[in-house]
Amino acid sequence: MVATDRKGNPTMKIAKTGRIDADSVENTIGGFFTSENVLCSDSHPSILARAKGKKLEHHTFVASDQHIKDKYYHVQHVNSIDNLYERWIRKFNGVSTKYLAQYLNWFVFLEKAKKSSTKAVDLAKNVASDITSIKTYRSITSRYEDLLIPQLSKT
Image 1 (cartoon, helix red, strand yellow):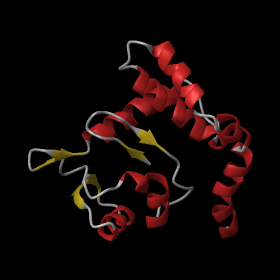
Image 2: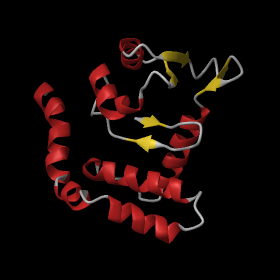
Image 3: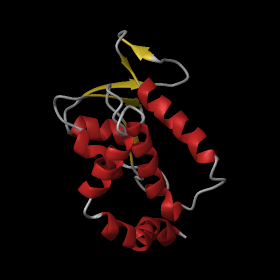
Image 4: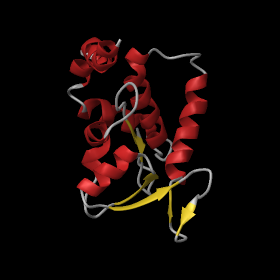
């Protein structure tokens, strides 16, 4: 899932394998939904359900028909980030699903660092502020297995 604000602060997280549902929307980007936010998205039923459940102002779009609503609401920031990511990831010639979350984090960091004049300092602050990074790295295998369990149980 990809989300961003108008200031270009993106977040990218793996929701689940297969089709997303309202719970996976909540688990990945639900923390960003507040009554102060206006949600703009495609008209996926899971996102519609989550927005309705949280009583959010929500504007939906059909990409092939509509790009802007009321001259203000759009999903172009998200589409742009998605496009940048797709071009960036191509140079790796394939990425293991097991490490996809780390690639997403790397990409988001690079996008945020583009706007900074002190990239090295930002990198150091980011690494130093994340005291759980080693624990996260060591848990890659178990998190990957947790991601696959629902899919494996269907086969």
